[in-house]
Image (cartoon, rainbow, N blue to C red):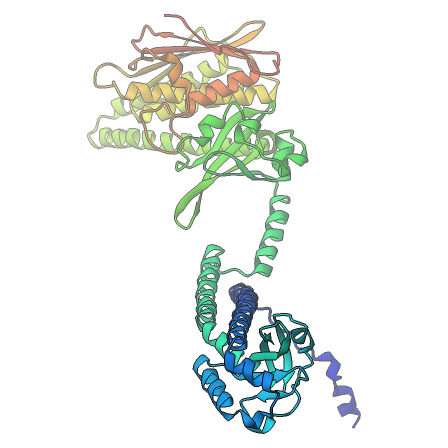
Length: 561
């Protein structure tokens, strides 16, 4: 018994959870309800107008008929004779025939005492007229009234009867019962009724169509689900450490999270303002809105006095392009991880290249040993060892910054893999760099210049020896990079090579190398010179100030041919 009492659960604990109606069902109910209300309101309004007009029409007909009867000589003679009604059977018969012809419900003739002389029911002849609306007629008025008589409620036209001297002899009352009038009104309103029914059916089909269209437009989500998704989206966007900007196809800002406002040094109130991308990134808006279908990952640019790492993705809805999504983070937040990753990648690339190179050397040495050419094998081993050691010693002698030295060594081995010679000028000299942000920009600038030079000489390696000559120097104010190649040169429009779209290659990251160089130079106030190299190709000289210059410089490059 105790167990049963413990296991007993109060019925109040069970609550019937009513599942909310779907949006499609709600729309159908709302639309049909509104249409039903409109149809009933319209029907009532029109029915009232029809009723009033018909009552006026019936009253006018009754009044005209009563005036016609009141002027009949036999009626005047019967009222003058002041005889009993049963003495005028012919008049009663004639009036009854007339009533049937005009479809009136009754025609009553009474004297000044309101005693009936003519009535459609003979047994009521000789009795007093009922309705209490005859006094005005006996005073000489012509009028239409609505009253309840012996046959029921009716619309009556009452007209006095005069003799030749103008004396009132009695009155004529012609009436149409209210029931008969209502039937006639309903007959005339049949078209209106069918119209309202058709409107209701049309509203149901329209409601179903609208409901399905709205359901498809919102991906079948219900209002509570949309509200929950919106709240989750707000929470996610304002929680992530990346700045997010959603744009429509014209570049108007649809959504910007709090982190993006912080990164771009904008007040949070701009989240609720109408903005264009040019208001946030004026120098890069044109590039970021061009060719939106091309994905951009890890693109570096300078904005709001800081280096940003930006990515761009295409937004699609129902298979159509619906704008772009930009994500950004300050480069300094990723500095440590990026440096470590860059070092690992450079080391892995160097090992890969060296493995490929040394495998060829080992195959050669193995072949010499098998052929019995031991002296030549030993000589080849010595040359390779001395060459690599001399190269490393030369780099460390001229370039005291290990990061730049490692960059040059990696580019040297990468170029050898594609049969391109990368040489460091013997007059090069660079001391250690203390400023980390300056060193990062130097690595990006020099690396992009060498990569572009290697790609340029590959296009003409069938015409001349592919060479890239790098010179590094520094003065009291500037650090100087000079990169020459034996490629095809810069062409006539030298400014065009620094636009993001300038490239002879395809891919998401191509065409932005020299644009990155320009961006980094603007961020540190550097300049560059363009010219022709003695090797037959292009020559690009970069001047990077050792002291930080805030803002961008005007006229980043100049021509020296």
